[in-house]
Image 1 (tube, rainbow, N blue to C red):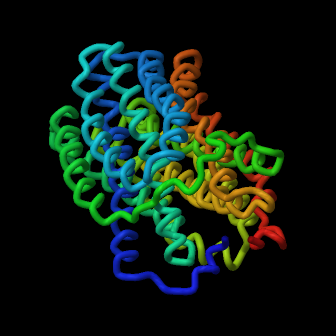
Image 2: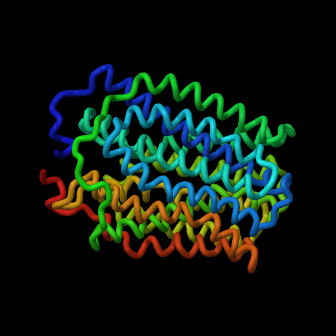
Length: 391
């Protein structure tokens, strides 16, 4: 069934469900942005080297990778509304744990937990968003992802203000976690019932077309994760920014992503997805390269803003293209692309950490600039096919 096959407009309940799932996306982004901005505090307060930090951040990667099959199994059996309601509370509980952890092994374990619950919530809230989108009869997913970026901006910007005021990360993240749990609980009452529609395959092996989309998504999410976990560290160490100012690297990245995603649908309609992604990827790659070559605080902040523009529309467009793949169930196709793509999000933080320890953080982030530029090569896979809208 295509989106246009829904003949009736959204009801008041559908509109409330859209607001509720949009709020959950924003809360997820707030959690990510808040944690990303306080990573320098954890690194300095716990006396971690770059390799130590990379190892600790690998905990979140392991948690997320472990969560993917669990999320797929749960999604095939449990209503996405129920999963979303439970997992948003779990994210609120898990968020402050890494800041309270006193030593590297405990930080690692706490990040495994945080990565796991964040990963399952990511799957659940996207499934809920798809259900609401079906009831609307038109695309809303780009806007939902835009609100995730808005949440990241709110989380990182507020974290910067709090850090500038001298508030330690444990107290700050505990407060944010409580807010996420409470607001998430209230939003959960307005979500749409979405029981599993089939008990078929939980996992899908991507074919060549979906693999190309997965590769594009992999490169984009690699850059997103690197910016989330290392932008503040780079500003702090290479550009010698204060802790409060360092948080604005990810804030700028999130702001540009949010703005681009909120207007992305209209730009894509005029220029087409391949051209938009190619142009944005090259802008992001060149922008980040300039920030690495000129490690001055204003230049670096602008560099992460341009990187955000480069990454903004990639994931919504690849998921949308996957859902239009002829002869494939939309949900299965999106899951296949996500399985490949989210590997980039999982491995980027530890890879950057280990490369930074062996060389420098500048060299490590140069990998992000290269991968961002390479996204332009397979962007033709985003082109809409003539038969893509067939049922």
